Image (cartoon, rainbow, N blue to C red):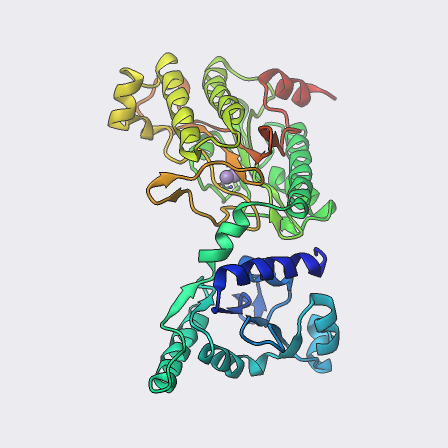
Length: 435
Ligand code: GLY
Ligand code: MN
Ligand code: MN
């Protein structure tokens, strides 16, 4: 966890944007996995970004109109009988100190405090995410407050998403965030190299998954940042293949899209390599098209460039390459105009990366692409997927290739946070055949 002063600075920035508004946020609810056991708990990213609080059962109110207690944290109270099962809870006094709150209260007091804070605020910001119960309650509260203040004036008109402010803030990573993201990237990069070295025909996809995920945890990550994709042969052409149950056959291309979460921050890496350590001519042909596009996009990524231009460059290079190797017919302009490339390349070139693997933040504003700025982090992940049912030449069937790195925009250009995993054909072959 970062020092509480960092979260305090974020709350001050939030307040500048909110004016006389109030932020009333709920932490993520716990999710049941089976009967009475839960999924591992993961805090809501906006809640964490503003509070640093990672335990379940919490809420907060950030209220610049409340001069005594502008930042209130609501947490589960100490309860020795429950703590025996789930771990010790901080006292309210210790919670105040650790999280830089003005007061810490029992979570049972949250709704009443939320109603009171709404009455003195012109706008209410809340987290509008998957916690529908919280959203409905907040809508009810606003309706209740509107009735109360109808004759006296003031009060909020409605609810706004906290993301309208935080998602713009989260787009630019501060130094501490970059440090954590580099750590997540390093662990993940190392895990990919280990998986390449471990791979042998006859293994099962889940055994490579185990190599990766055990390294994530061994190095202090909380686990995978998203469900690991380990697809061999035709499975590599399924974009979100997460079953990872099949046996790896000699001659398969393998696609691994997997990365660690470290101290709440995600990495996101994909590498593709031949199961037997040696690229066939057909695998090499597709791989070189994807690699050229990926490297060219990374080279073009610098401050001042429109984010959309990266996708356009990627698309053009992939299309030109696919025409050259005989996967597509026509000119590049015709293929792009008709979108016939979508048979083999059907996703965008990348996405923002941070607390969420598909991080928040707009790609367009007022009809224009966002321009890249220092501190932004995003993936560059072109791919070509020729599934066995497609009309491509036989030699290409069952080959899925994606190459994905995590790019930080810097003052002078960019830094590839995941450059440590080999991606040149010669490097991959050398690593896989070394003893
Ligand atoms: N791992 C998910 C993605 O690459 O977008
Ligand atoms: Mn990605
Ligand atoms: Mn990925």
